[in-house]
Image (cartoon, helix red, strand yellow):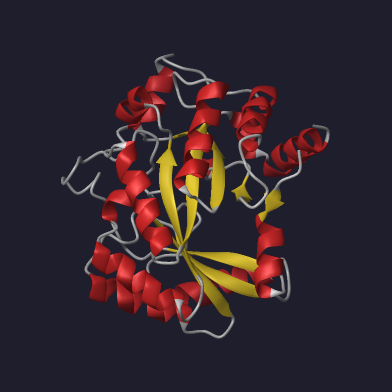
Length: 291
């Protein structure tokens, strides 16, 4: 099955190759600071999903370091400033304004991508994002993962799916692009359930999706459940079948931002085959071209 890739989307939108620069804004999360909980989602590492983000310095310095990392491999192109670690709208609006405008300032930054939770999008935050979107394109990434309530409770997501639906409606009404994260291989789920989550995100109005293979990282509560034998991770042939079932739910206009996700190798517990990113992408692309 053919699907619309992020590279195609960026080339059509910006007219050139575009790379994401992962940033750490120094945020936390209501699932960590005691508002909803203290331990985060069951799969989340101490980096809050920002394992590959620059950190520990100003936004300008982080951008420069991230550009240098990209330019060691590939020359040319433009960049998206990607606020990846933790919940990047979980702060007062004026702090957000300072962070986001600093990231947008360089000429070679053509847009923003902001990872957050749908329960951390007040009307004032969405108004700010809409204001910035009039300057350079802004996309908002929401961690849905699943729509199935038993799984929602197990992973400690901390909000009902109706909150996601409402956030998408309000973001779209404000003219913002929405990208939804969906996790494949969650304990207790099957391919049909992952496909149902994908179909729900499409019906809710998402513009893009990021599919993530469930992987187990060190020092997470998920690691203990894995070591206790409470679930197993998918094998490559299983993952590609689940992924295909999800892709089958997508109309042609939906952009597929990722077909898998990987954690830092130093922290990976399982599945170990996912550590070989080149193998994984080649395997998936070879299979998907045949279907």
